[in-house]
Image 1 (cartoon, one colour):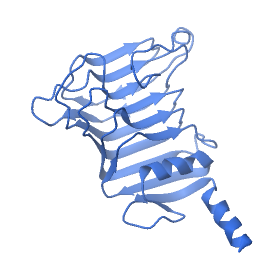
Image 2 (tube, helix red, strand yellow; image 1 turned 90 degrees about the horizontal axis):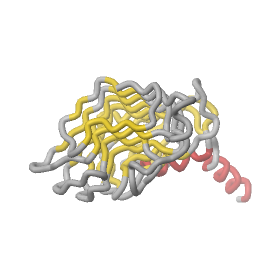
Image 3 (cartoon, rainbow, N blue to C red; image 1 turned 90 degrees about the vertical axis):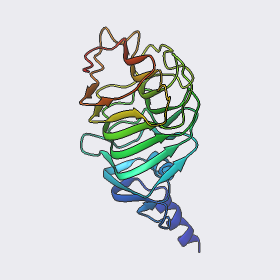
Image 4 (cartoon, helix red, strand yellow; image 1 turned 180 degrees about the vertical axis):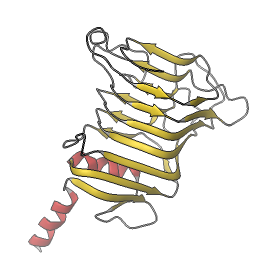
Length: 239
């Protein structure tokens, strides 16, 4: 019995490497997670090789999926999340997905629905030196917002604050990230959109000496309330 418990604990706490799924219709196993949050938590144990994840089914969240710093990542040991054409529906009062110091994670082929009516709701935020990540062929769509605010909400934000996107930090919030071929839009009638389509804010003490080099390429923005692109203290970023 003790051996079985030890083996079970070892499996739960093992570093990830190889192929996995996120599928709520299948039981939790060594290769399947029922929720995005469960997978993000597992990444907290680190990786020992490249990780590829395929998502199945529609998923609903009420708070942010948070990717914290991941030990073992490298140019070889990357984490690839294939949304596989699925939908992530978020009623979070802040972001749907948070990169909190996470590096070398890519998310592709996913639709994120922001169903919250709160002006603070947003799609994806990078913070705490979240570097070398890729968001590609992702649709971020507001469907519940009916009121506007000039200082809240964004489809994509690189920002150090959860409560105020324009709060300044001394160090970079994210560098060398690629946002490519994404669609940023609203669907419901009379939806003013978020204040910012893309907000990119870097460190006040870092920008003059250290390039942030984020790239925003071939994205389609169909609606926003105040700023299509808000960039401050950036160095080398391309829009």
